[in-house]
Length: 257
Image 1: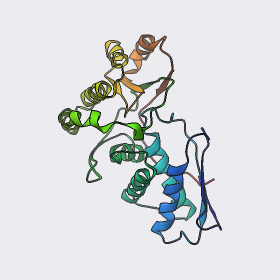
Image 2: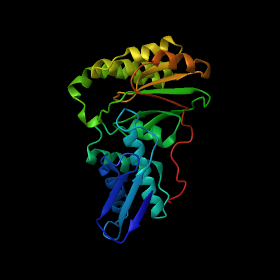
Image 3: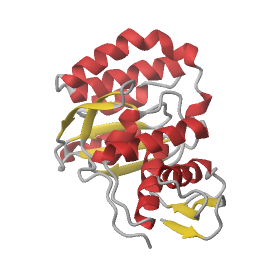
Image 4: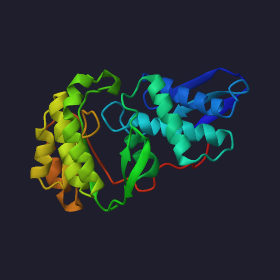
């Protein structure tokens, strides 16, 4: 949520779920919205995020937080922004806050629109949107460690370019599950993560499994009947297993309380 104040230039953010985490990203988001309307010398803001998405494990928590902070600030101003503006302001803020290397337009768009998207991150445009079966199960293994995207060694990522192009092409053709699995295996190898967690899920019947984002979390998508088998395959590993469903609705303003 976002509360406007009469203290221009003073923007205070708070990550309610983990106050030890930096609130710089959401503070910059609020500032950029005020600057968009030329109101940075009129208002200050108090902005706070609260989320069930674990931070710094590869689940696009920064993109979700940026979308939320931008939307909350628009709501505080009584404005209804266009999706493209929300995404651009959030990505610009992410670059300034140094929480992204690429801008992660794909993460931001998926968080905003819900379901699935294929994007051109360089041009910041959505190439394709597709529906996901809301009955599918999504299992996320989150180990007890964090990895902030800003720490990525890009020299390890650049050799993946051709492989990632194949992944992108497969996703654009509709082979979403194959693309997810291949993408996860590529990045696991490049970033030094153990791929057997994803492979164990596939062996247990997952439709797709792989590293999510830059890790260390691993996601598996499966039919409901395979959930127990996948959980059994992951049993005994340190960390937490989150069971959820595909996000269908995406971002929306429900109130500014």
